[in-house]
Amino acid sequence: MFVLRRLHNTKQVNLIKSITENNRQHFQLKRWTHDYLTLEISGENLSFPYVWLRDNCQCEQCFHQSARSRILDWSKFDVNIKPKDVVRNGNSLQVNWNDGHTSKFELSWLKFRSFTPENQQRYIEAIYKPKKITWKGEQFQEICSKHEYDEILNSDQGLYDWLLKLSRYGVALIQNTPNSETAIDAIVERIGFTRRTHYGVKFVVQHVPNTSNVAYQSSNLQMHIDLPYYEYCPGANLLHCLVQTKSFGGENLLSDGHFIAEYMKENYPAQYKLLTELEVEWSDIGEEDSNEFFKLYRAPVICLDKYGAVTRINFSVPQRGSYFPGSIDMVKPWYEAHGLFLALNHQFSAKFKTKEGDILAFDNIRLLHGRNAYEDNNNNVRKLIGAYLDWDEIYSRLRCLKVKLKKDDVVY
Image 1: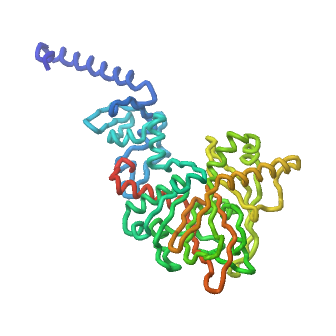
Image 2: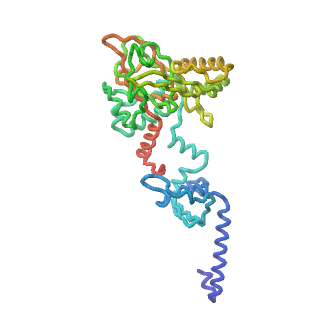
Image 3: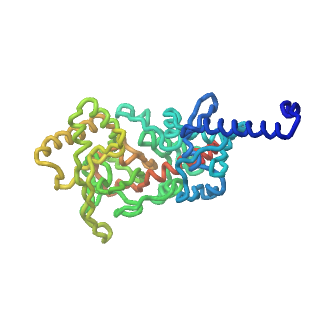
């Protein structure tokens, strides 16, 4: 304004305006020569690619708020989009794009999604999946948390605490469950729904003389995971102890397959490599409730993701098929590695006996479980009610609870 007041004619004013506009445009073009925008947020310099910012515009033309879904027309999307101007107002940011569109973002929302390795790791552990903590048998009493049935049913915090411990350690115990075959249903409904298999919506574990499954016997049950022959294997197992045997025996065995995998990788790398690379055929053939089934699936004993982290354990002597999908010279080395894996699981296992009213919850694609032999009598027939849950549902409930309990609105 000071400059304009000193000008004496309109021509000079227009000349200055033209120069100012040209300089402003030149500044903008120079400013947006990179493919990302760098901002200082809470003391951190964080960069956000233009294409990502435009793709994640939260306005009603681009994002459906109630459905929480992107609705921008990607057939018209320009991956080379550039800002025309950026305005920061307090805790928010406005980006005016060169296609005429305007986007607004909260800085806290951006920081939560920033691209630094540290922030990305925080996001993974806070929202995606809690970090797993491995353990060995001697640590079992320390890591196996105990939770009250009524508290899980009546308290979101109680439910969250139980699911968090289950996801971290792969095991958690519910106590004081009512003596009812339907008591487990209420726990499942607090999370989502059961994972049905060819053994039903739920299943009863007790001695059956002519059984379709060796788990339904009172003899020693070798350590295993359930249903490795499912490509999408049930993620978590819930076992409600209705009647516990009074005989000697009947103890549960549990071991952390992730700990065993880490131990083998460090101490027996050749055997570890075999168990991560050579696929095994897992199978289940039979009939349950007049339903015939013939299940087959191939996968290694230890499954890894692209980062080398363990994603799933497959192990069951009864459910390992007779067809060996590998070369003949790999057979004996694989069997030796297989035997070592089982021996280590026994070496580092925990042994305990659930009480009536306990629900033992454990990660079925991480922990191996088994049971020592026992004897029934006419007045005491051991009986458990079982149900499966998918990890998709458990993680989903955990995220919903975290947002609700922590009031963390930047998640959405």
